[in-house]
Image 1 (cartoon, rainbow, N blue to C red):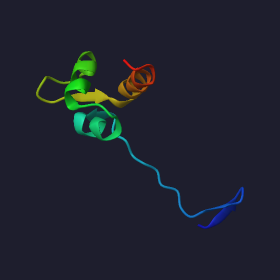
Image 2: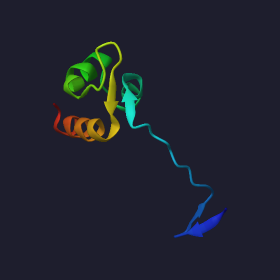
Image 3: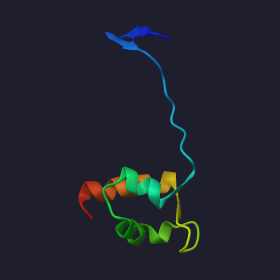
Length: 72
């Protein structure tokens, strides 16, 4: 594929596939918060019960980014 664009060579495109629902393990990998802090912050957004914490990706990510930016 090697194609030159704006002085850089594009070797490949990688498209990441994200699930619509994400769990706490995924969130702890991408956000600098503990599991307990994430559960407390996102308990109202939990799509399942307390044993299986699943969250809607498109609601949780903007909420966490805003919270981290303002330090809440």
